[in-house]
Length: 197
Image 1 (cartoon, helix red, strand yellow):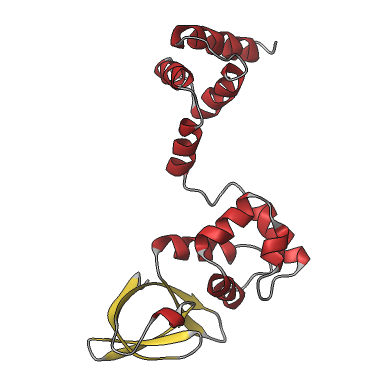
Image 2 (cartoon, one colour):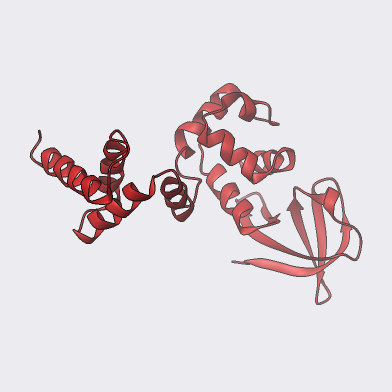
């Protein structure tokens, strides 16, 4: 697998680049040719797509953009050319936000995406596009400090993240408590849940 290509732009069109790397010209499908110029030094992350009919190299500005592309082409009925057209129309962040918010209207506004495919994208990818670390940071940022400290306490007791998240949601229903109180509330909640109460 070719992970990336670094070289200079030898020529380009509306949706492709030819990158000169050590005297070899690599033709790469690329969504952002408006940002390049001849002889510009570039580094593009690449994905090699092959079928019985063709062998194509797709290029991306960042690892995040390539990861999103790979997720998109995993959706039934969505091929690499359509995924590239989506990335040409909108940034990776905008597409991720639309998917996470279930915003079918924004997805439908992209080339080659109808109502059925837009709904399928949301169904298949919602909740899978935000990196886990970022998700946890976001969740942490939303928690009051005392709740966050109580969650760390639950972690030391061996509780797993999904259990801690459920306990944190319950703790937030009891505002203005101390860390110790939140820890007690969380433990009581988890014990009750374990016993099916």
